[in-house]
Image 1 (cartoon, rainbow, N blue to C red):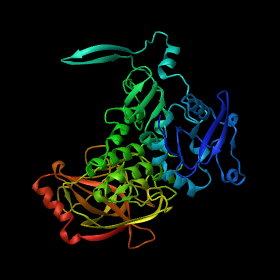
Image 2: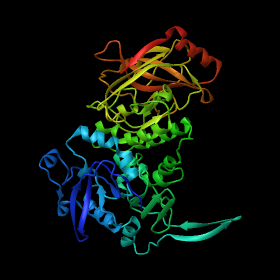
Image 3: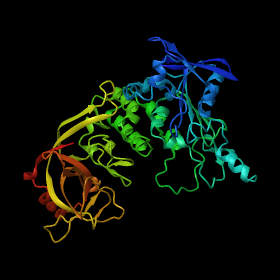
Image 4: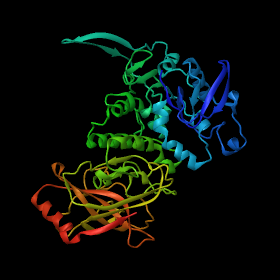
Amino acid sequence: MSGGLAPKRLVHIQGKRSWPLLELYYPSPGENLQYSCLSYCWGGDQPVKLTKDWILAGKTEIPYESLPQTLKDAIQVTILLNLEYIWVDCLTIVQNDEEEKSIQINLMPQIFKNAAITIAASMPVNCHGGLFRKSWLQQAQDSDPNLSSPIRLPCRISDREGSVVLARRCPHWYENAIHRRAWTLQELVLSSRLVDFNSRHIVWSCGHGLRTQDSLPPTVLRPSHQDDNSFVDGTHELYGPFGLRDAFRALNSTSTVDQVERYWQKVSTAYSYRRLSRPEDKLLGISAIAQELQRFRPDDYVAGHWTAYLPDSLLWSCTSTTTTNRVYLAPTWSWASVGRHYHLHGYRLSDVHATILDVFVKPKYEEAPYGAVIGGHLVVKACSASIDLNLAQKECDLGSSDVPLPLRMSVSEKPRVRVYHILDRNFNGDTMPVVLIEIGRLALAGLTQGIILQNHSTEPECFIRIGYFFIYGDNECFDDRLRHLFPPDSMRTFKIL
């Protein structure tokens, strides 16, 4: 098993397997070591973690008996793999030093790619659950002895041989908690080799393929139902056909910018469905993937977006009720400025009617340009329309015509004129004065799309983005009304914070 250049700190494992001695180790610059990484759910504060006081006191010994079970199990797996070093975030990154955390997370692509193996503790909701737990099938068989194991039957179709798996669907879904955690997505995607202890079986994934302990594909057993619409089947997301791990490994120097952008949209959307304990980590938690994708594209990364796909990528909306955050996450034109569940509508418009004049973001730390930001703006020139948006009726009357122009904001629950979601940015009352700016048109779908702006509360010459709209129709009357709504003389320049 090959290794790579070591991180800033590692945990050195010595002594007997029954009672290993652990010590904080500082590799020399350029030192090449074989080490494992642990990907797991914290589930709250860690009982043992590296702090500034620990560093100042010159402590290096880590008490094995004080570690939570998941960390103990990962150390045991590391020993069984004949490795002497392991990287665990809570033990190797100073947890009460925000600057170091940002810098080390900026190095995460190298940390996980250079590791000999990543150990994923997928089932436990916190650090105390451990790796070695019964799979959902074993748990189901404990309560129902008549529940048989899956059966694989050989089959032949034409000149191709394969197999068919017969399995009773499990009536309950034993969730892999790791696939709800935002931080772990980039850890699992970037790892060169991965052993995943999940709720179905143990999965081995590397550049040469994928294997499971029971020889079944990791996506063969799916839940018979799911009540939570926000549920993400992370196992299928990672390992399924065109999964995020294989798709990432398929990218290379010959990949087109379109291919890289499609991957970014897929992975960032999946990321937005996951949970963060600290909302301010929104950009930091996916920064390692963004940094890796920069190798394959010439444009710049700005707060979750890529400049070559502006203004198209401004056309996003939330797919769940979202309010403004108390902490600053990103400029309002970025999907990273809101809580969860974003969906992109404007991937490659057929006709772009808006022009980006300037875009700027200020990183929180200069050493971590793909991480958290503390400010930014976007200047766009586009045709616009000022209207009063009626939130009480969730409708918008654009009307100087007898026939109302169909309009939808964000994602509608019903097919006609409806407002699904507008961010509650200091708004009181039934109507809200807003500005619609036209971004472009998707001709095949007959959609004209744009974003909804509101005046900034303290910067009179600036705006904030509060929503997305589209107007649909493809007849001559529609085109006439559209020209009336966004006439050429309505072209203005908007600075969006």
